[in-house]
Length: 420
DNA sequence: TCTGGGGTCCTAGGACCC
DNA sequence: TCTGGGGTCCTAGGACCC
Image (cartoon, rainbow, N blue to C red; front, side):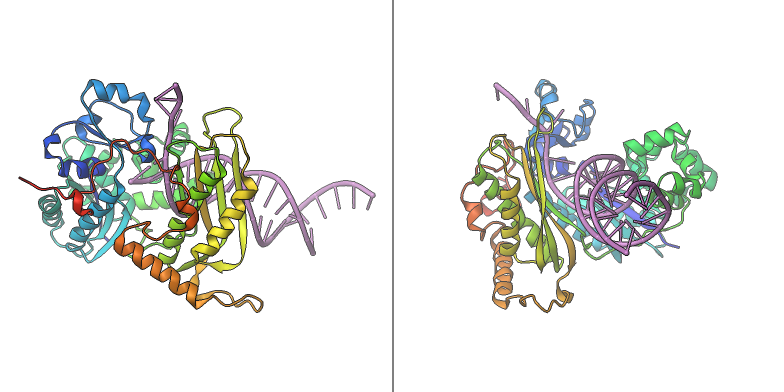
């Protein structure tokens, strides 16, 4: 019998900020997305003010001022570093770990005899060592572990930060599932929930009892699998390897919207560097390079330019990929509009070391491969962007807005917090 | 001449998640 | 003054071909 736990940081970004600002304990905090666009995290006190998550910040800026909410821009360097520390601590407690996102991981607890004690010890350990509060949900499938995690935070009576379905009898489990809206289930979003509700399937219990074949026919194999998982049938293995992406996207909105080709070229060069680094990290090579530039989707007569540039053979070389991306950019660039966002997509990714034999293609240049290795090593050691493409350096006008960013307490010496 | 079934490949858009 | 994230995967539907 498999047993999974889903552990996540409560209001993770807000909690990270608060670790270094103990004066904000018990006070409302929100954290904004890249470019200070949307609200992506809020402390419990801020959530109590009923501000809309994932909504545009400007709509609630007044409310924040009025209630003295402290507002932070995203500081992904800080959150990434805190995430690594949290994951390392959690890994000490379980034989198998799959890092699912920046603030959550699945743990394999199969065979553990006293899960509740282990779960509470994990929580205390993370809290004591890095100051982040976490919640633990336990169940026989990933879907049920996710749902248990939700229960551990939100369902009155069971919201002590740890919840395990095995504490309940079959009848009690179903009673609880009957209280949970179908939209709370992992993989059931807004649209799917609305369609299910139209068929009178509005709770987790009703989806659990739905006919899997009918669900498959009317929706997808994915949702059929969710039904099985709700019934305690484990369909998703723990994947402790870094997942191999089938496509890699790097894109950003602009802090100040440019019209100028050179600014777009600098941004595209930067994004292709980021994407290529990720590509090399998974030891892949891409054969298609997509480039996208667009104006704001909220204006009339918007423009979205998108093209795909094929390479003669798959590559992981930043310079080759950048050449293709810039050629694509020249194709789709139109003089005139103010651009809001630019990005690249690497597609048709294959493992680098089993590249297809192509009689006519030149073999990869070993000097270029060493150059890329050296570049990655320097950027790892001395910080991202230490070595970059010339086109990136032409202008930094494209960088995003981050008006309220906190210091990099854990990764920059000059930002180190000194406790007096 | 025109129609058309069925497969493959490709892509834009949808849905979801954090 | 004006403001609206980023990333991944899936799939329906179009284009093309036999």
